Length: 485
Length: 116
Image 1 (tube, chains in turn yellow, red):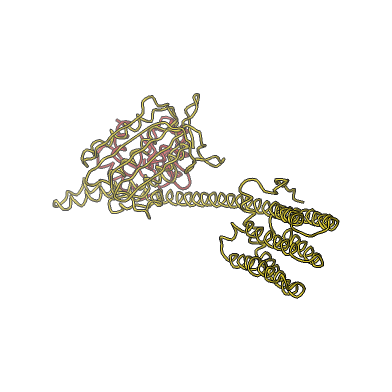
Image 2 (spheres, one colour):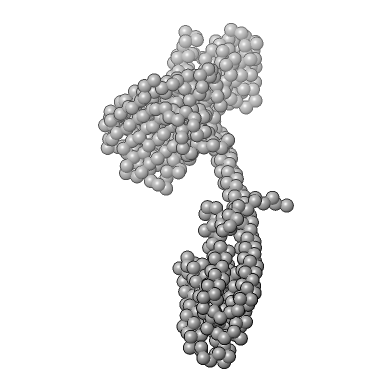
């Protein structure tokens, strides 16, 4: 059995706290609009038909009676019916219905005051009917209906005392019955509204719980999908890695034979002409390229184990740029270094992290054939926002609030087209195949960063350049150097 | 002695090494054959591939060192095997590791260093 929360209502006005009242009002309006229209139509019909009978009984005051009925109350009711088709009616419903009930009640009181005593019973009955309709059929809020009921009674008393020709005993009697009708009407109206609100609250609660459960389910489903994707990607990478390793091992011997063969040809058969010498040179260079591919395949398929020691990342970055100095100068690329001083040492494999930065710098270089600029930044940061790999779940690499080192390398190059950006780290994806690209550079880079417990993010806009951000964890003091996976 | 399961490579290495004029090279195509040959003849140096079907380079090293502890042994294998696959204890017992295919010049230097 579902345990329900206790309903919180104002005991007098029966209002909910907060936004729930607005939602209830809209729901209540839509739910009972047809009933309200039917109630008004019924009221107009009976108020109108009564005029026909009373004109037969009391023809002298017919003019005044019919004015009240057919010029005021019935048109008022019909006007409400017409207005009810508009959206605006919702905001004015209470006021209009209460106004119509009061007009009908006061009209009866006026007619009663002008009628002979023999007709008073007719009007008392009409007034009680009006009170019944006001408290029940019209679905007016309790507080409004009660106000209307007691107002009608007050007008009756004033008119009866000042202008009516009602004997005191009859007045006492009728007052007693009108008070009783009001009290009973209020009780009925109160309980109707209370139970309508209770039903609404329970439905709302169930709906809210259902929505929350659905949300949790959706989140869990998304997490499972993500995990599944990661597992599939892992399995793919493992399969590709195994394949790459197999290929690399099989290719090694034919390459060795070619190299030994070229050695022999260069030594034993002097090239007849320049072309032959050139061809031998080309074959040798092709083998060098093929060897590079084999090495990359092996780097990808079975990475070197990390040898982690506390190190200054800024030194690694500077060393990487120094190694690429000649090529950067040749390509007319300006380098700006912006490294925060006094950064903590972090646990890295210096050689492999150098490989990461060099790979990124090489990619920037290739993206700026006409020259350009590379800006390198390194700074520490406390992560305050949820993002890629950053969150509060156990599966997130970094938790919100953890301290990290951020290494950014941005270029002003050609940028990466939107449809290619998601593929750049995929193995063997390359746009430089004709220039000897293996498509493994970024794959290996990502693998090294992830084995350091870090994240690599790539942002790019075609024609504006690319920014690569490497986020590395700052481990606590006392961590020893050692091997990681 | 040069041990490698790739027959064509054996032929070319033999021709190239012997062309230097200083070495006589015997080639075999398996670890088992290599051990057998080492028992029959005296070699100054054994160069063996690390990954071979049957008896691999490490098994050849163990057998040779057991038989002739002072016989130098060099592994001639691919990039990666020398760094990640060959255990430190093995690396400490072998006289040199040369990665193929490109590092053939390094092979000549290693041979010269060992044999003089």
